Image (cartoon, rainbow, N blue to C red; front, side, top):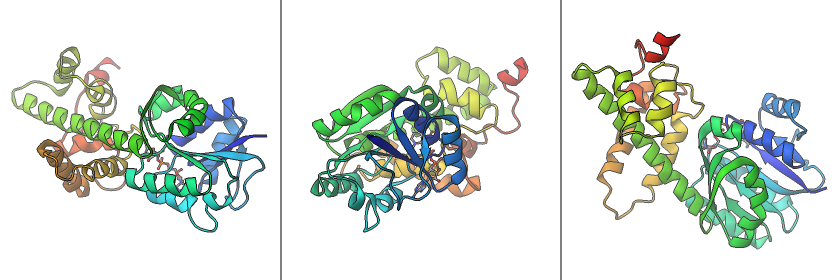
Length: 298
Ligand code: NAD
């Protein structure tokens, strides 16, 4: 039986694997046995205890790993999946990876008749759970066509943006805009407060006006003004993404991008261990000891 191996069951991979396993025969692997047990306990997915022993029938692999280094480690080398998958297999990398690494991996896969698609996602844990992720896809037309039935289970929007690596490039640029929105909205709230306007009031204004963004509509009310900072997307992963975006800017005039990048990189040591990406707002003192309209309503 044709089986998909889903590797990487973290904040995003876990809900995505659950949806995938309800639609297709799916085997799951993560370095965390607890993560594997959670997915196999809640869906028909079967557990893989060790990648050295691939289950029978695996012809498709979906990766949801933190960085390109993790992806390369799983695919390359004598014990890597490229060496052990059958000819004609399909690899779909859904993490936010580096376009250059992805292009190289796609070329290596091709030498073994393995199709390779980059299909990073946006929408966070909430859209991963509901199967409404925005998916941006890079790869050859026939490889993308093969990946489509898997992506349709996970995404609300699927855009084929170009050849291998193009999906990853689009994803890095999306997160550059997303991080910039948090930073500039944070600055607007600080300025507003200096005029005596409460942060929650200013967010209400932005959301009724043209300054709104997904950050002002969702992240500020839910994670920043409440001070919970628990969106499930790590600051360090966001910093990785905007570092990828910066790496694409050689020779281009990007003063705003450079400023946002410098602010987030230089602010990182202020935030301690494992900050959430919404803690960009904490660089401006937001979200601490504040009364929010949400608390007032409780
Ligand atoms: P995470 O850190 O929560 O999960 C990563 C998982 O990969 C962990 O469970 C870890 O044990 C596992 N892992 C690491 N190395 C492994 C290996 N060699 N073999 C098997 N499993 C391994 O990360 P996440 O938040 O789920 O993000 C995954 C990817 O998706 C990243 O590239 C991230 O940038 C991207 N992304 C995240 C979000 C979000 O909201 N969290 C949104 C969009 C995109």
